[in-house]
Length: 399
Image 1 (cartoon, one colour):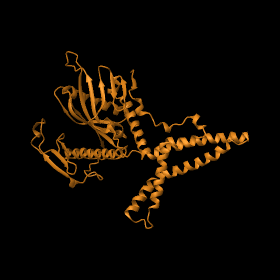
Image 2 (cartoon, helix red, strand yellow; image 1 turned 180 degrees about the vertical axis):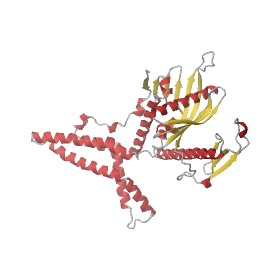
Image 3 (cartoon, rainbow, N blue to C red; image 1 turned 180 degrees about the horizontal axis):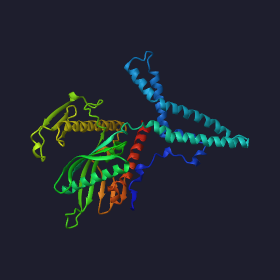
Image 4 (cartoon, rainbow, N blue to C red; image 1 turned 30 degrees about the vertical axis):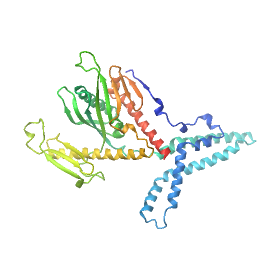
């Protein structure tokens, strides 16, 4: 299928210029100065000064809580220290080699020139690749699956129909990525759409990849029932939560304790035959410290509803924790990531113009079917992940 992608504001994703050094610049006498002035190298240098300060603040006994905290910080900086020592050794060799570039012996100058290029290449690689990989730690959520909650917003029946379309879109992209997608809850309406639905996507890096889908998705198209051909605008709200594989345990790590959760059982409501309203199978959980409430009545067994309710509660608490960590990091720069705001319009699906636009990227794809089939959606997801990594690197460079 023909597909065209373009950017409205490509500058948003332009990599930091100081991370790139052309071969022409390698030959300049001030190349080392340019490398050392890059934000990433400066950030590493600051961390090494901080490490020295922490070491100087250690007491002789190393028994105080402050000492333990300092030792932990020093230990976390150890891989960066090793890389910094390699950088300094290479830098010193480069300075020595630079002097030999003016040697009267032509053969010595030639050897020095080769060595100079190799050393500059090594320093450049460290500045562009090694240091960034150490400054931005590996994702702590790469092992998590994803729970996608989709709810109809503005637009009535047309919005509910688009919820069904998005379920199919995310199921399709899961297939392309090698994940398993299962609808675990849905509330259908009489027109074949869904008022809301829950999709579990299980697989490595599912949450890290899909988390940027959270937000308001807008669809513009002519409904099948529209006789005048007027374009309707509808919205759907998407919330992506982290999901761990269920092991049957209700209490895990430090997200909550059982004394923080109020458990209520009640009779299920709605269609379901004689079983409904006769047994107390529905479960409602309330996390008292945060006020988060989860109700579950999809299953006929109270035990199954209880298990699923705890699974959803855990996902929401983990999402709250990860979101707060993001806010804390961004507060240091007074610049919060707008894409984390789930009330923000993140993407528009314009059927009449055969175009899908992601407003955070300023990127559009011409061929809406390829997006809804999951294939082109991967391009958006890849760019959003890359944008996130660039922002983390910028944070590290400024900290």
